[in-house]
Image (cartoon, one colour):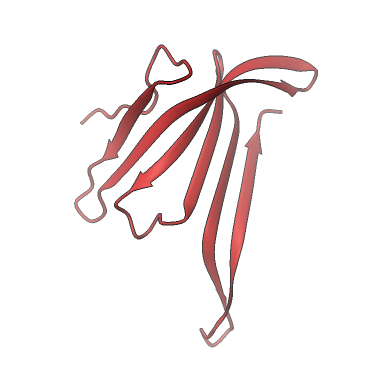
Length: 107
């Protein structure tokens, strides 16, 4: 079935819910357009809407944060962070928990 990934017209203050109805792992993400920001990439300015993701009712995505900056022409930047990644030894023993941050940006 179709899902609502981005709600148009995209503007600050709107909220919507994205649902991915898989039997083995249903996923619900509440999304909110929280700000208007201008990003500069390669000498070009992009007027963006900043969208924050809130993962609901999911043990798998607990501690996962994602933020998108979306311009009229598409995605300009995405930052994702995971708070609880456990590093293990070669024998599978937990060593420590770390935070991973990934930044995808338009070139």
